[in-house]
Image 1 (cartoon, rainbow, N blue to C red):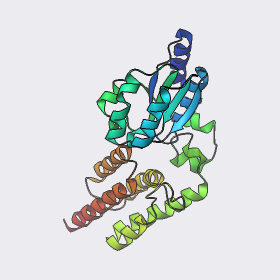
Image 2: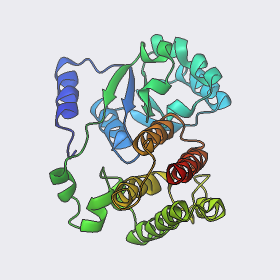
Image 3: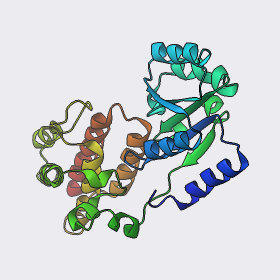
Image 4: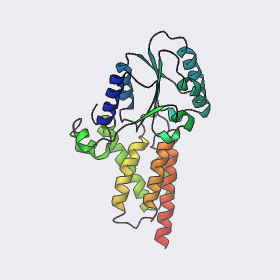
Length: 265
């Protein structure tokens, strides 16, 4: 795996010591290679991998199944930080004392979004950040390299980037023109659900917006809290992947109102 030197060393150590943890939490951004690393672990222990759902019903089904298997099986819960508290609590006992032949892997974006009792039972692996040289091994495209921070993000269609750039420009112009109506219209282009593939990915929008609004601040008098508003939104996007559009809308409205007040003062 490109750019995961220390994590690969950890996996090699586990294999040499024949001590692969039975419950692993892999933390990292979308596209950082969490699932790829999980598959490497599954191959290393020669187990069958099953991707499970995160609902309480599917968690209970997993628990029931884990006590009946006869061959090494690894249950993967993707984006487990989005699980309900009830679903997380249901897993506590089984991940603390996994049945014979069973392994559990959770992938999360924000490890702090997991309850402490889950974290304390698992071995946490954090995906390492990718350097520009790492990314250049995958793509030489300057547009992709400008906005993409990991290998998964490099797979995006450049047409999607162009659409996101246009949306960002509309949002920034709406702030400069002090138009709440135009700002909210720009927000309608953002993806609210993963199934809305025709709309713009919120994380991509945020990466482009941060870069361009800071460039705009060199020309226009932007609010003093601009950087803190951006940081707050980025943290919220990590904590809550289910309502990213609302988080961005909230940030943009705050920036607009503060821009209006900055102009008055």
